[in-house]
Image (cartoon, rainbow, N blue to C red; front, side, top):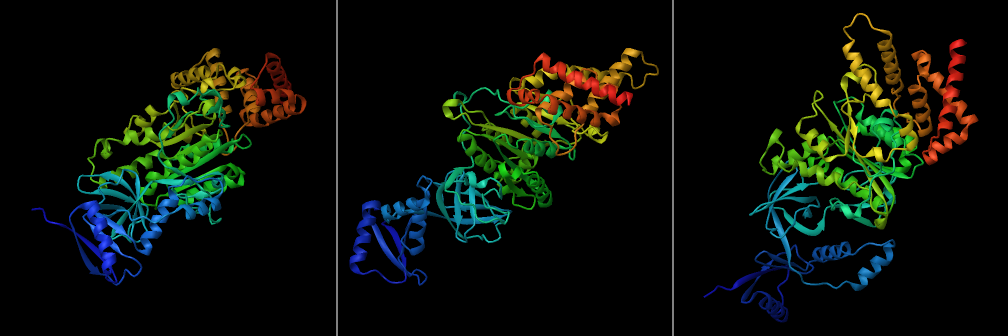
Length: 576
């Protein structure tokens, strides 16, 4: 004979006969033969808690508030918050519903192992009884692993854990422009609360192929070495890779600065960086007026690995809002090496098997599902775009290491920064031989493409000649001419930090250099020569600048005018 189930009723007062009868009828209809046992609990003064097996029916004041909150969160938010609240309050009805409550069985290093939540889903947010929240990150047969969005010091063994039914996400919207937030969307810039009624999951499926369109619109960095030889298109993923302290972040920040006035919304995600470094970057953006179209998501080195792990996904959710509105967005991940280390830390603490370099086997999927979300949507889907500039740090220039190899295979090209070039004063230190853009050529401005037609070939020839003639005693005149031309081009590609160059000036520089006109000027006077030509063209031939900037058009006539202006200026400077 089966033994009757026991349902425990916790309250400060014992129910009367009528209440007991209703409770028993409810339990029998749901569970069959049930026996009700009352347990006095002086802490429960407003309602009761009914426990049977793993189901908990919470009819306390706190339980009713939590149920109402869950109801509110299930409503798709609109533009008006007050009508939503009025509707929610008017339509809401209290229900006796079962609620799974888990128990913390162990906690440490911002990881909590929880039992009793067999129906919890991967990526779901859990709420601990002390108010700390976490995300389900590991599903085992007898328990689940949860990463805490806090240091975890307030979470103790035996604490109750509640399901929320919500996937991890962040608030999104226009209100985030100009703000500095943490990966949970909480502002950390002392500028007040961010009011946004929109909420987006941090992990969403990447757009399908049918929902995309080809990349054919340039996203210019303002850096001549990149825009001329390794152009980036809107919707592309271009990796910035190199050793520590070689100018990777500078390229990303200069790209953000160059989007001023171009209707491109930017998100800069700092992962595992020092708070002082991030503050300096924010100051640079603010002084240049770039915070007017930029949001900074910060997970500092002192933050828990869980926050560093979700930071790029949270930043992508914020950027995707603009893409889904039919706008163009740019996101910088600085950097994914630290992101992979944070994920490795979490995985090892969760007891997953280590693989190559102690990374778990799914570390490739970690970044692929992130970077695949960058795309240019089809016109049917609004035509918005999300361009990604992930940054990866190498050790001693080794691009064949695990994480660099993975990210290179995911992205559409890479800009490789070489330490030797950097320390020799070539900044940005772009290695022309290894760097490549597999997509941006189709999106490059026709004016820039026409002006730089032989640039990469000339630089490649110079590189080989320079290495071969390094130990040669005497050189013929042709070799000397080629070396002088190559040095002139390398000098041309040097660019000051945070000084992006607009399109028409890039075209002028390329025409004058590839036309061997700048070679007549001593290196120390090159900047003065170029500035003089810029002013001459901008003042006397503004239609050329407008055609290049607005239409990307460079006619032979325009090119001849630029060459003539350069030759006249060179003659004056050399003869004077």
